[in-house]
Image (cartoon, rainbow, N blue to C red; front, side, top):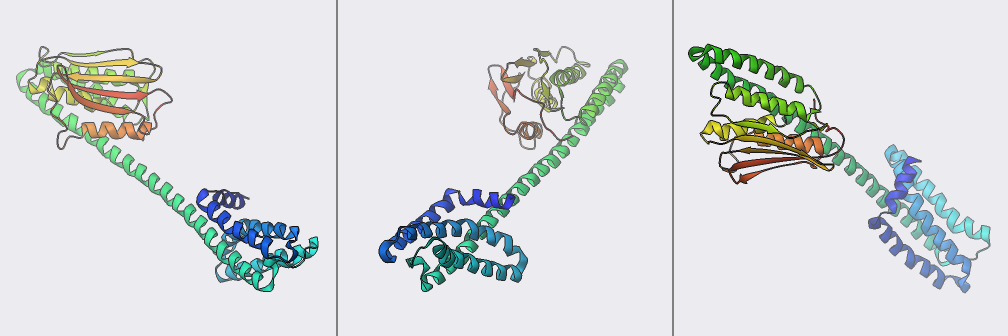
Length: 338
């Protein structure tokens, strides 16, 4: 039944239905005009022949083609029986006399149309179905490739952040042991959160913001006056892919206060029934995409993978530096790789 329904659905597609109608109309007209005495039953026979040919022949080809030479023989035999029944048995059953399409020569043409038309339509439907399957497979493979790249990018984030911070702690150990101790404790808490989040498909936006606060606090351990970082707004119960904002927060620090630009780094959250918007401002001037930078690339990949292109990350110049805006649609939890 699935094959019958699929064949019928495929035949109703305009790219197939229109040619079938264009071929059938001249045949029915010729059947009416050139049949002796123009018997009204001749038109009915012509219509039935066209209808059965269009419906049965492609389905029959799809059923028998996979059986090799035996299937081809079966296809030809069944086709001959169908044509014989429609051209000889059906007119006799309803008392219809000789008609244009039931003449001996016309039946040979009708058989050729049945076999060739069924082959063409059935093969076209099979090729289209195969193409659809390959497209679906290619899309699935593309998503798997994106997931693999996402995992690689995510795994890169942790050691990148860790090594930079450990280098700073090593320097603090020589100059200020108390600062180094606070930094180690803060880093330990952050790494536990990062490792936990890396295994989750989604977590509350509130936890993501807490992780950004820890990042800001870690940078402020040594020089509290240099790093003015603020996180405000009510995230409510919004869920996001874990570690989504962390690379953006790192970039805000790196290209803002850490680059010598004075001013606050601010993360603001606003939630509406339609979407959640996270705005990250830093005092550094916007210099366009930076070669080799992976933070923005990773964030955009994660948004596209989790929300099917319904989310967005836009970054550009602002009044007092650079602004990144993440827009997340309202709805169910994102689907991201774990």
